[in-house]
Image (cartoon, rainbow, N blue to C red; front, side):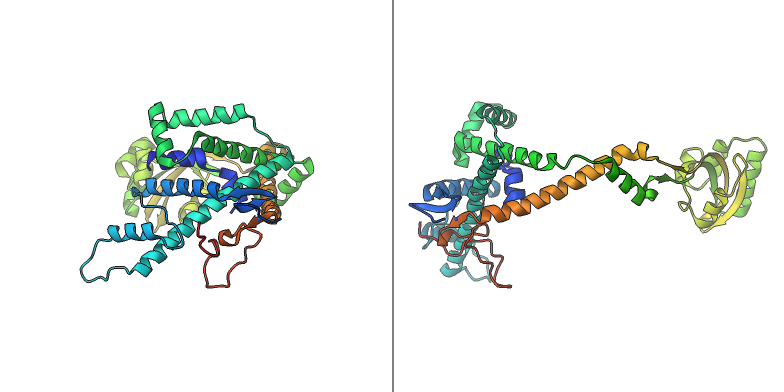
Length: 380
């Protein structure tokens, strides 16, 4: 990833705000949108459109002119110059290139308006909830990210120049990140309490989750024939160690390397005939041969661990952690839904700039498009 795009992601991502929270009264003056009566002017829109275009250029390695409606003259000219004729294929017409430029413009427009609207939503929500971040907090976080990404000041200055952003832009984005995190923390904080009754209810309804089955540690030797299995068994009975016989005679590579040991076996884990034999055998009794589709086994059960069940006291910490996470996620999902509805109702957009987060937005009929773009291309 290019450094410019990587740092834009670090400094510019409005994490909870844009991804989770975001997906216009009247509009006065030169504004394109107004959120709760606060306007965002065309100059602001054009500035962030340039930033979005620069970010795209850093990712693709190309730097075409920003598509300018309604004629897209510079964009079409650049597209024509970039076309490399391929034998047997028709050269794109001017109408096709214009359509391409229009789509590029709409993509930039959606991105920029999404950011501008979401930013106002986050700032407004923070104010209504009494969530604040100090200038010192913002500056500290900004410096931390900047120093991580740009050890040399010259590199940072170059980034500002190529990204089209100012330090104020980046400080704003860091502030939005911090506010978003604090809003999220405030929303889930009240849902971090789990009562004893809730713990008991979950424990009672999920008994099997707290049961541990019987486990057995065994030693095995697997051979291709019954005669080979009987021979290996006789060698062990004659005084040879199980480990040495397993390493010399077993055809099971996993257990052979460990001297025949298989630890922590539970019912149903091994082949049916072997499984039944292991869990019916007495401890420290050499058993077999047992015929299976894989060959013949002889085995010895070394240790057994009886089945056990966690008490509520033992399981309390894990249950509490799970219930807390569930409650917090439910609270956050509910908040996000209400947040979107509430702020969309306060978001007025000028007709050429209507996107999905605007009060004026009407979803297109099925099959006519995704409905996330502007309704028409503005002339400025």
